[in-house]
Every structure is written in structure tokens, then in C-alpha cells.
Image 1 (cartoon, rainbow, N blue to C red):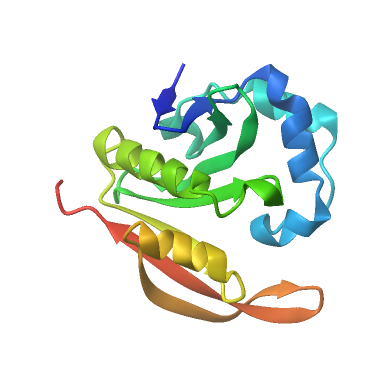
Image 2: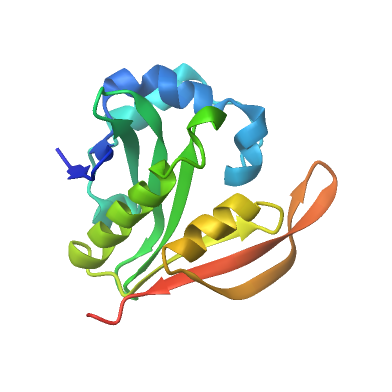
Length: 176
């Protein structure tokens, strides 16, 4: 099992017991904008996903981890996706599930742990994230972790009948 531990949280592999937690997140329409979700997910589909979550990142090109406190409370999810081992790059997405847990350093610590893992274990040269122009909190989160805004995709995402611009943030590791 993958366990990445910080001072206040740990990142862990998905477990079958995460079914309800992921079901709630994936079916929260307020969050669909973040993942370009268009339709609800059934518990059956999420259960199938969890059954295959053990597959290697080099095979499935993604890795989803649960952000958990030391009382084993699930706080959110952090993902590596669009994993490109040939080019040594991958995208990162992060979600802190409950609003009352946001802006408390949980996301910063999770992002630090995941970047360290991506650079040291996966030998990534860079990680990147797409952040909506309206999501100032996430922009600050990535900037605080050393990500640099390197691009702007104008009218990139259509959300509720309105086009939104997305910013590209990159963190390049010059060690490898």
C-alpha cells in the first residue's frame, strides 16, 4: 500500500471502504466543473473503479489517493492524471471535500507530498495543473507550492452556458 505521510495528513491508496466518500464527491454537482463531469456516477461504476484502483500508474496513466487525517477521516482526493512517462510529466488535481476543511493547510501539505512523490519516485520532470480563472484559492495554493502560471486557455471550459478561461500552472523539477 502506498502511504505518504506529512505532519498533519497522509495520502493513501483507495480502498473498497471509500465507496461512499467517492460517490458523494463524484455526484456533487457543485464540483462537476472541476472534472468536466456531465452525468452522475452509479455506485456500481465507482465500485468497479475501486476494484481496479490497484493497477499500476504506468498501465492506467493515473493515480488517485485519499487525503486523510491521522484519525482516519477522509478529507479529500488528490490525483495524478494524464501521466506521460515518456515525457516525464503529469497533471495534478486536488479536492478538499468539505468547505470547512479548506484553507487550513491540508491542500498545501497534500500537494507537497504528491509533488515529492512524483519527482522522486516517478522521476517526473514536471507536474502541471489547470485552474479556472475564478478559482483564486487554487491559484494561490499552486503558486505557494512553487508552481508558475505559464499559460492561459481563453474560453476553455463551458460551464452553465458561460465560457471560462483556464490557467496553466507548471512546476518543473530541475534535479533529474
